[in-house]
Image 1 (cartoon, rainbow, N blue to C red):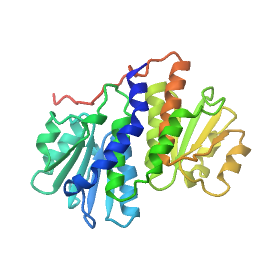
Image 2 (cartoon, rainbow, N blue to C red; image 1 turned 135 degrees about the horizontal axis):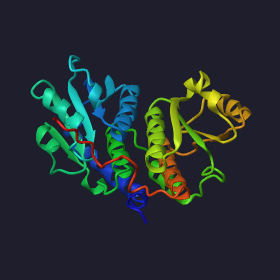
Image 3 (cartoon, one colour; image 1 turned 45 degrees about the horizontal axis):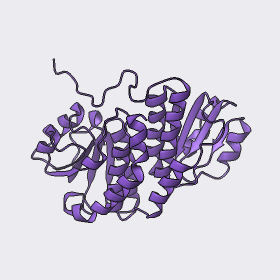
Image 4 (tube, rainbow, N blue to C red; image 1 turned 90 degrees about the horizontal axis):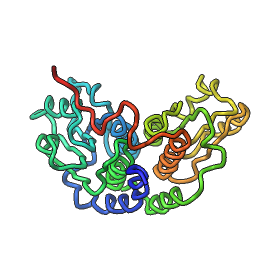
Length: 294
């Protein structure tokens, strides 16, 4: 079994542990009413998008999400929250360095023995969810689970949904599709973006992601009989019928959107296997992006 398959399967246990940590870490995490920015790169950026939508949508404070390379240095915040499995990502380290002494900085990392831990004002270590694989699964979802629990928005049923997502067979014929589109609304837009990234990383698949209501505004034109359109969360009225009318396959996300992401992770591994790829050695990727300063 690949590293990524083992790590993917451990998510229900990791989520339970992460959710259980939330109360004890409250002093290190954003307070209600704080204006915050959440940053990350790749998968961590998409988790930042999901968290930002959850926090602001629940009325707990203005919350922006940025790819670390696009952080607006002139904008004023009460706190910057950085997500980084490796604790070594160049762009995130750059933001932490530039904001030293001007804003409180909180980091969620997988390895405490990394430069990021020493640069933060508050450090949250999820070492139990750290990973050997290049392709992220459990660290990112565990970090989001912790943040979701801190917001009071973690339902106990999500762990059960994740177990279902691991146990149930994938829909027949899905692996053979030639193009995959993932849709979300609100906080699940970030999860849809991450779902598409998982398919690209692990399976070299042609994938896209959109806010569900935006899918009608152009992207639906690519849909054919070889397309799978997967909704993470509740779908807008009528959208499933419109997708069916194109001949594309519609996948309704009946589980909690975070558990739906686990189903997509499984699909990525299944497509990877069908194409003879090794998901532990994704093309052109490394576990952490460390840029040369030369």
